[in-house]
Image (cartoon, rainbow, N blue to C red; front, side, top):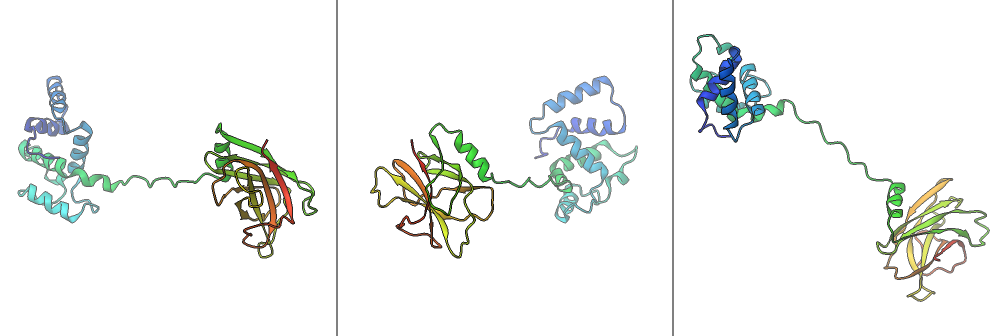
Amino acid sequence: MSTSNTDERLLDLLVERRDRNLVETEKQELNQRLKAQPGWSEEDLELAEAALWASVETPAMPASLKAKLSETLPAAKVVPIASKRSPAAPLGWLAAALAAGLALFGWWPRLNPPPPPLPVVPPTLAELRGQLLSRPTVKKLDWAAAGDPLVKQIAGDVVWDNERQSGFMRFVGLPKNDPGQNQYQLWIFDAERDERYPVDGGVFDVGSDGEVLVPIDPKVKVLKPTLFAVTLERPGGVVVSSREHILTVAKVL
């Protein structure tokens, strides 16, 4: 903020307001002069005034700014301004000090830095699934056991949005697996592709009992899904499944 066009009468009134109660005409004049300063707000002026009166010897004030203040006010050493203040102090000197404060008070917020921003918490899989369910293009399909003895009873569903090519699988009752021995793999059968080569929807593990949520990761674009199926394969999955262990399926109706 430049002080080259400082309204000296405005600064005089601010200094006098610090020492005594202004009369009504002076208050009105002060308000008018404040409104005539487009680059200043009263808050700016009050901060600068408070900073100057409190002390420019604050330990947190950078040495470079102390030097700048000394250059701005060559007649005043960089010591607490309150010690310079006296009833006989010339208003012009005090006004100059306030003008310097307006130019330099940018360091003041450093004494009270804003609190750090709150950490951004990513949405959970359940929240992402809920958001997907709100879309009009989404399909929700229930899992059904496919007859494999490894799965006696299963519940859950597939949530799939073909427009976004994204979705989630929810399982209850799918047995835990040992990733070193085998992994589950999703297959998406597509009416526009050869049935022998369904789309690989990604491998996943089940490490706990209860409800499990798994994001779907199709390796190529799914054009017209007709069936979702989960098989048990070797670690890392396979390119083409023998379909020996089809554990559960969800048909697109």
